[in-house]
Structure formats: C-alpha cells, structure tokens
Length: 310
Ligand SMILES: NC(=O)c1ccc[n+]([C@@H]2O[C@H](COP(=O)([O-])OP(=O)(O)OC[C@H]3O[C@@H](n4cnc5c(N)ncnc54)[C@H](OP(=O)(O)O)[C@@H]3O)[C@@H](O)[C@H]2O)c1
Image 1 (cartoon, rainbow, N blue to C red):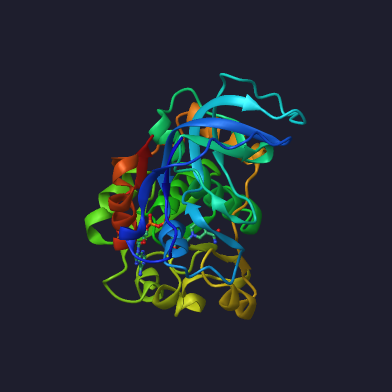
Image 2 (tube, helix red, strand yellow; image 1 turned 90 degrees about the horizontal axis):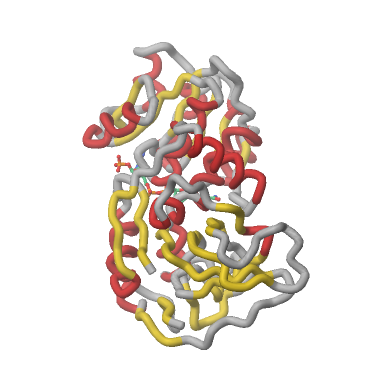
C-alpha cells in the first residue's frame, strides 16, 4: 500500500509517500480502505518531535488520526456490527505513534470507528472525528452546557472552534466566538451571535462592553487569550481548555484531552443528519501533497479543516 511516512523528526520536508506492506488485520481491528484523512495541528507537533515525551513513538511514522473510508476486512473478535463494504469514519488513536491514517489501508481498533453519515463526502467526513469529538466532549462533559447559557469559544474560526460553535448552538447556548476580523463572517454564519476580534484588545474588556462575563469558556488557544480569564467568565470552574492543563488545575477548570468514542461519533452523525453540523473544508490535498497540507496547518490560520484525498 502507499502511505505518507517519515523516518526522522523535522520540518514538512521529511514527509514522503512510500510503499509499505499491507497491515495485518488484528483480532480487534477494522481494516479501512481510506478514501480521505485530514490534518490537525497535532500532526506537525508530532512530526517536529515535540510530543516524544508524551507517548511512545516508533519511526518510521505514518502521520494522521482521522479517517473516512470503506471497511476492507474485520478482525475475528470484532463485535460492533461493522461489515465489509460499510462506509465508516473514525479517530484512530492508539497509545503508540506509528500507524497513522495517511495511508491507503488503515488498521483501526474497533472502538475508534463508526458508520459515516451518508450526507458527507469522504473528505468532509475525514475532517470531523478528532476536532468534532474534542468540541463535543469539552462542551457536553467538561462544561455540561445548558440551554440559554452564554458560551465563549476561543479560536472559533479554527478546525475545533467551528464545530464547537455549532455544537454549543445545538445545545441551546448563545455563542460568542473569538477570531481574526477576516473570519468574523464565517463564525457568525455558523451560529455565533457575536464575534470578538482577538487582535483588538483583551477579551475580558471587550466582553465588559457587551453583555459582561459569560457562563462558560472553551479555550482552544491558551497563552495571552487566557491571561484575563477571571474577567471573561463568572466562575472559573466553568472553563475548559484543550491547551493548558496547568492553568486549569490552578483556576479549578477542566483540561480536556480528546478520546475516541463510538457513541460520540454517532451523536455527531446525528447532528450532521439534522443539518446542525456543517463541515468547512478550507483546502483539499492529494496524498502526494501531504507536506503542503502540513505546512498550511502549521501556519495556524487554515480557515477550516484541511482534507487529504487518498
Ligand atoms: N487536547 C486535545 O485533545 C486537543 C484536541 C484538538 C486540538 N487541540 C489543540 O487545539 C488547538 C486548536 O486546534 P484546531 O484544530 O482548531 O487548530 P486550527 O484549525 O489550526 O485553528 C487555529 C485557530 O486559532 C485561531 N487563533 C490564533 N490565535 C488566536 C487568539 N489569540 N485568539 C483566538 N483565536 C486565535 C486562528 O484564528 P484566525 O484564523 O481567525 O486568526 C485559527 O482559526 C491546537 O493547538 C491543537 O493542537 C487539542
């Protein structure tokens, strides 16, 4: 099979597309013939070697976590009902970094994949799992958003933020997003009632001019964006961050680390089916162009998801 791969940590230039042996189908594995994957910021962070202390890495590494494709084979112990020929999507995470999803064949642990919503293309579907699950788990578990609450989503124009705005709206919240001025219309079109420009001064001060502190904050940025968190939210116990675990421990908030979850994928699929979750694919690359896809992600302002066709 063909796969993107790198055998040394470094810049996007370490990525090549190579022939690798087809992966065997383990007992708990769903082998997926991938039609698309997507690129998330964690992909370039791993490629640069920044996360080597966090999980075991085994070079050469096939990058990528998201997949959409067709089931090619099912391991003998799989009991989740997926069958050869089914279209699936998934956030294919293992504890070891080695077998990613930027490959023609993806061995996915059965807990990581579910039926893909029929209304999404493979490129759209591959753009959802990691980012969509992050937003869903932060809003429904860590923050337990209730109807009528005012929720601030930082980086509302990004891959996770776009899903977070729509999911918070589906939970009945009023959503305020932060984004650059260039992306304000995009964030409004997803359902935010207000968009604050993060380059126009501290967010706490901007909120004081319009409605005051919010009920809950989802942080997808960290650093400066969170320096005045006490002015942004009524109670810092209602803050969730995917960035800064230490700050969350200090203020009594919640650090969120996304996890594969079939039920949550099904919940996202329901939102898609009901027309409440749309996917903005900002750019689509071919597998051979994966280095360019990583470069776009690393620049930090893709304006939506980055899909890779396989
Ligand atoms: N812990 C976890 O499980 C987990 C899971 C998923 C993601 N993450 C992390 O979450 C972060 C966001 O991921 P993503 O996929 O959404 O990234 P992305 O698609 O690259 O989006 C990044 C966004 O950040 C915005 N931004 C930059 N500086 C900002 C600031 N000071 N205030 C507000 N917005 C700002 C940009 O907005 P403009 O383009 O409008 O300037 C851009 O839309 C990444 O660091 C990623 O690694 C963590």
